[in-house]
Image (cartoon, rainbow, N blue to C red):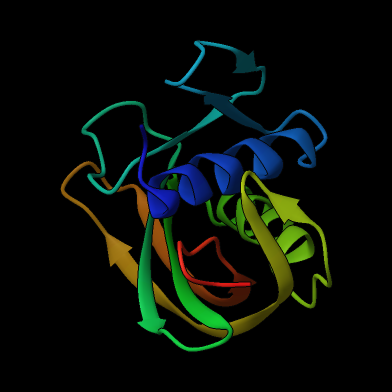
Length: 144
């Protein structure tokens, strides 16, 4: 059985791809289904290839009646315009998103937290980060 945080990350990636108007691509390792797009969403490690990619991690910040998860996205592209397109797409999906479900997790709200330019890598690709806080109601054995 998959951990709830892993499932949340997969469902964030799937939702991002589904709502990106064909820009983002995600293959769900749970069932090998692919949402087609041109920019892949991967796990925590930023791969050397392709030139355009989004890497994602999720970390629990606060565990209480409502759990707060930090969703950190790093993305890169070869041009500033393309980097802006990826960033704007992610921002439109995850800023001020209210309610919904992501797998077994109920999303209460998502909000922008921070972002930064990460400069260029050795291949002259531009990179940026965007961080969002997801307030969720997650399944717990003793929660009623």
